[in-house]
Image (cartoon, rainbow, N blue to C red; front, side, top):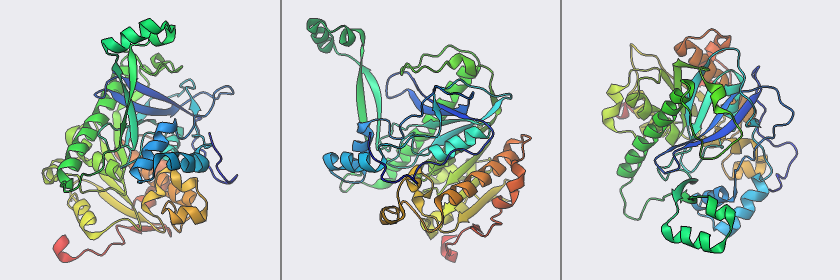
Length: 402
């Protein structure tokens, strides 16, 4: 698709004991259905290819819209910078695990989509998790799509044109792009409505995994080669976590409130603004806030602090030298100059930062999902005990904001 511009750039390979597969799932073709990328432990495979990091050109257009760059220009820029990168997972590779896999539902940030956190999702899958990275349809993704049924007029046109392929398909692709705040529009009502929909979409994805695990026959609208029946009875559905970045962090909080099947949550540089005040006292699960050094501010941290509890473990650490974009894959795909110019890179080595994030997450998940692995070797990271971590936050809170 394009030219990455440097041989040293690329999304880091997962470090766990399992090879990683990925596939896309869309159940119910409408905008109300579920759409996610699934990452999972897979069989070693020679044939399987690695998918493009950006699935198709419409996502370049969406990123351009989100960043307020003209589409014709943004497509060329993003295709040049990012078009040749691949996700570090084998497309539609056969599932393989010797034990039942705990489950993570992952929620992307504002202006992102399902493929942009592949370094984190692939690492978790390599450590034995099944991870569903939801693509949200609340108009907070830079781009996503669904299918609608053809109108009678469109069907008649297909029949008259005598093209068998067109006549066979009853569905038309509909693209949904990022919705910017309108002039004079109040932001909270929009974001609060979106975060509620996002949480519902995470729960819907989880419910689909329950169906797949129980052996219910599912029809994937996308017609991938992956055999969904191989996932029957493979998931440990007593061990489920929610995870997300930025707006996805707020989605984690909302999802924990709405669904007790989520046993804990990991919020990466959470943007707390969309969460309504009524949600805070209702959350009973442990939460881990992993923050960047440059993004947070007193008002946002004080909303995280409202979740502090003497009875339920609520933890917070800050990764030194990081920026808000240290969590999505962009940080690995740009050189130092352009990465810092576009605020996609901090002062710390991006691979070191994501490694700390992943290890701290794994330790927290082992502690609160209660499985027997060796992730407790990283327990010290949960408390911020590392030269590249700060316990809590680097933000000074005024007494009035606490």
